[in-house]
Length: 336
Image (tube, rainbow, N blue to C red):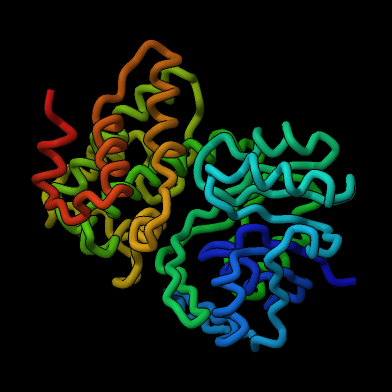
């Protein structure tokens, strides 16, 4: 019997992962906004990646719902909504899922699984994350522009999930310490607001030392808080987490030579926060930079650069600038 999987919050990540799982033989249904339902009904669902994957699902084979009450019973429900919507989604899911349903959070931030467990005490809730970037290109097309794996807590229920993803070539890892993984991913996601405020594709932004210095400053503050909290870190890139700020600050010619895997990015790839601002949506900055501020505060530390960048993103949400040069951003977030 095919694994039944529901994707709740079918946007860029949700549509990509759902299509990859359906490619692997799972029975997938999607829950999302009417706009996305209309787009997929007209265009079908198409995924691609920087390794050369190209896969299409005809519109008639995309099961898409816009109401929670219409969602059929599932073996696994994967949550891909924005972090700010987690509590609301959990409340709506609670009366609809059985105790046999496994719920997996594949969201940015570090606290979503905890929120889901509190609202769904009878369900098995697993923390997870996606280490790659997905760009929504319109007409039902979703492109994974960076490398990386899907990571989920290591329990027996995720074995079939990994097997289904393997058909599309999507890397999958079962992890014993997801708290460590999530904070390690958050370190990398601190580039999301920088990218969103640069107005540039990820590769073009990371190729400029001035932007990388901004990221390194945010990461140094985060690393101080993470160290104080005694949270171990995972190596999610070719560069150890503790070395990232140093490597990022290198001159462009050295960075290009020593950190080439960090630039193995499709030229069209952009951060999800850039996409949120482009579509006039609230961002997840409170669940990225805001988490750094909270962890720092809990351990008697400050994170002023993260606070300043968070304020700039909130200004951009209200129509403020989104085209800062690296030098301008550095001046704004590094000032005493």
